[in-house]
Length: 563
Image (cartoon, rainbow, N blue to C red; front, side, top):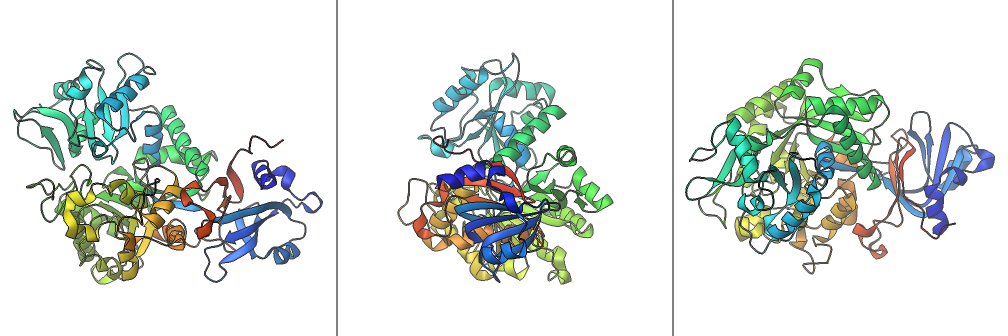
């Protein structure tokens, strides 16, 4: 095993010297899971190094006989799987989060402030203090925080902290003063469209801004320049490939963000594939309508779809529900887009032949999306549109079969279930929870299930998604047997959700998601078999190397004791 790790970390010495050929390479491994139902397993892959496409997948003797002069990599006792694809994530958001204070996992307001004090030492005078990842549901006092919680430590420096789900901002008094000086006072009883300003009994803003209200402060944060944006995106994609991702469906990419991605693709600096989805009914969608779907000639960047928003998030009680929140009477959440504006955007995308993907968390939000999709698709609902519902988190039991009936993709994130399981039923009660995070219900209804993480809301590591999907437990093994265990996925179903079904959701199944002759040589090398139930926990699999177009874009360092 030590020879294998060293060999994968330093590739050239592992090539078979006597039979090297410049244009074909062969990888040999104990186990290769192809994802191809016609040939589920193999022990050798051969690909053309010029175009990065697979030439043969099969048993080692047959492949070596077919390509006797190919350069050879003997990976040894490892397992190879198709490249992992995160079907819902935010690369630009991840890059920004890596440059901010990390508040993920903080157990109290006090811990948040202490982390912020440490991070503040890296900032210039007057610079905004930005952070992300706070979650009041993890605290002993689960009430929303306030500006006063921040003001003692940061009386003058403006602070903006994004909630872990990206659907609320927590700010201090200095940030509120900047916003009020530049625009409308935040006090009173008015609310912005698609958002909510939390206020005290006197009508003063408390410091938490939900969904659309967050932009009242966020709009005043200085934007990073182009060089900084490139640097952050590069950090994000490198972290992604180090975790075994060869593809990401980036949800909500602006015209400017796409321009940064194009520059990296032009320069050969994109180590993975990005399926970018335009950021709502704005400039990027206008470009798609004017010029048609975008595909970069290098094959690693495309924009063929648009991501729309319907409602908020469950953790901040912004998800739109058909009835009151069980733990907040008289609150049914909010719509970030009016049904009329949403229908107009869907019709626009449909007319431009653009794939539609819509964020919907609550049962009302999902109902509106389903009704609108059905109305707009009309007689051509059976066409190969593959419209998507992102999250599909709380759905009535009678609405779940509509996904398959309408040919929709349920794009879901396994770690959302394990992150939310401690409080989700408090939000929606024992009956509505039956249609929440209900992965097996979708599969049994005939719907496609594309899996992702929603990073940086959750961690970028797809192994955590595989583990959550199979166990429905946290990493300490709680609760015993898993939360709502009847909704667990098998390891094979989970892997399919991160490979072939994710590829299908992006109309990419002819290129990636499986290891088959003619497809891209995108694959991941693990230290052990993720489909072997006796092989250990999925969250502790080691990524030895990540390959895109037959080239290693990440290689783990060899163990320290390797000479």
